[in-house]
Length: 402
Image 1 (cartoon, rainbow, N blue to C red):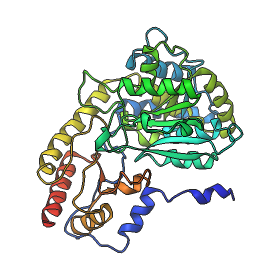
Image 2 (image 1 turned 30 degrees about the vertical axis):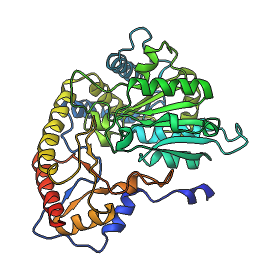
Image 3 (image 1 turned 90 degrees about the horizontal axis):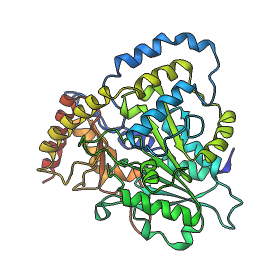
Image 4 (image 1 turned 180 degrees about the vertical axis):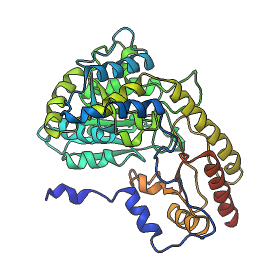
């Protein structure tokens, strides 16, 4: 076996299953799960129609690069969404489809990390708390993760000025997540600009996980993206920039496993070679459904409306008893707790049959603290009535502690 596998920690949901094992929730209360960020809104009907209308495509092997029609729909959406007017993405050079962002965020590290490039172990930077794929990707690529703590004190955004110079000298890849999982924080234009300047100075690649970018609350202020800032700064070859997007959250299609990576054409040319061996080509029916989804915005706006209603209702119930704020984007709440996060999670489940995710399962101890401690992640993915009921039960539990 690959010896690096021993460095991997159990996935957060494995830890959660162990935490609640042996605890029986009250039988009179239905189970409500806010632990997993799995969208529960209905999949768009027209996307499902496109999927089933193209099932005959299963008779053919898909190509790694995807169809030209798929790539054109992806770059069309990206160019419109991020206003890449002066240097629009080219479907032949700047984009590759992927089986959801998860596999691409993992595999990009395997493709770009060069363990011979530094005398010491190469470094991969990620936010903390974080999506655990970043850590696993770094470890299995033979790199050393370096975690940048995000907390209320820095607006839950990565503060690149706090990274020591000796770390920057070893960095090959920086993962950013905006809007953030689990905090919902959005990197600002100046944050991306600062990171781009550092990438130019130290010659590393930026992997910007933007899979929550289409769940936001102000229709006039969508979250900024990495390519948008690079474009504004005149980096029209998008060098050192890769962005990762998915239909899972945007279009309520987590089971479709469809997304893309876009940006630096020179990097993507070599990454394409890697992917021809990896074998994650999208089946033709999936590609047809994806084209339909990327070409439509009406269902995405409807999706945002549903989340707005849930945040308004849930925060009205929780804010009198918990320190919790509406995020800038995304569908998570990240409340501060009156007790440790494992106890809160276990007892809430045992008493109220509501399942949440301990914040410490999404973070690591770094620079003297664990920024996920005494938080839980609440994914408002269930229906509005279920989210409201869950909020009332959480409030009941919190009030019982006083």
